[in-house]
Length: 326
Ligand code: PBG
Image (cartoon, rainbow, N blue to C red):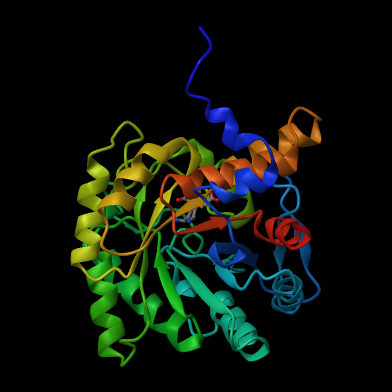
């Protein structure tokens, strides 16, 4: 018996395939993460992430300009400060490195969307995302909220179009919203890393942002990779507290979670293709084991297919170039 149903009929030519394609990847959906450190003329390679660099404000302006030439116009900024202390003071210092970079970029490109990652871990000498109780070594939740809220206000005043808390303290979205509103910044949206797992896939980022915890790990505040239903709770709380946008992180190993959250959320949901996801594709393609361009496009399409409205990815400029070529 020959089959009657022949799904292959619609796969015969690219023109037919394109007609019935369900998912599209566009450069407008991409957010390009960038690392900025003090100095001048800096282009310091992150060895575990080939193609990713730490920039100084001047070279950052050039890199952003190159990305804009291929249509990438949304940027997520991480600071690598020269000074770290127990309370992460450079995070909320007006002259902290991210604030300097925000002012510089806003002046150069007023229409770019600048997103400030909002966390203390790059700025604390212990590398945790909150204040530490000196006796118990516990990461303190409520005392950290004030510092996060202060950071949000300083970032928005320096030119952040969106603030993006990635710390995973309970109640931070509400605290940040109140602080922004109190400072007259009620138009600044909050992109909450609402569903963020304690993931080994952040490994290379620790080199890029120099934020490795000096003791312990992040499992007392980031989510357990085994949990799926908990994502709805985290997302629901953040929306109730005023989050305008949600992020699920990592992306590819958590597509089930992403699909759940995207289907239920009243606000747009994005995903973060994290450093380890990028490094895996880069390492395998540099060895000739994977085709980099196809793997990059397929993984990003899969993240979109699962429901991501936007994607944070280190591949953003490469995708921009690829889409431009058609
Ligand atoms: C900081 C932060 C991390 C990432 C984004 N913001 C690291 C962490 O939580 O340990 C990871 C991004 C990546 O791996 O690309 N809180």
